[in-house]
Image 1: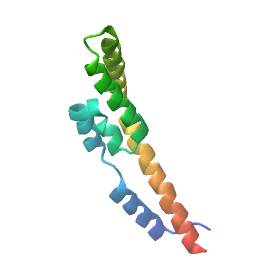
Image 2 (image 1 turned 90 degrees about the vertical axis):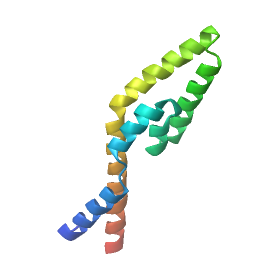
Image 3 (image 1 turned 30 degrees about the vertical axis):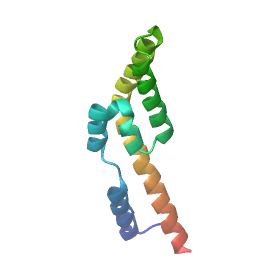
Length: 109
């Protein structure tokens, strides 16, 4: 079965309502990126915790050589996230779209 235009519009409205904001994600990345806030916001909890631990342990051991390496790794990851955020937002929207489409198709039965 196929969805009609009204159902497709309703799905897109639901996606827009539940979608995460790229602007908010970038603000969190810029101001609270050390804590992985942008990843928590986008639902990537595992990597957010890893980023947070890398940041904290890096600063706790900065007086040792290893702390500098940990902070360097975190800094590279933080910069890479600048380019990954838009893809993460798009993936979240696509997942929501697929979920709502499956629900609508299931309801048609």
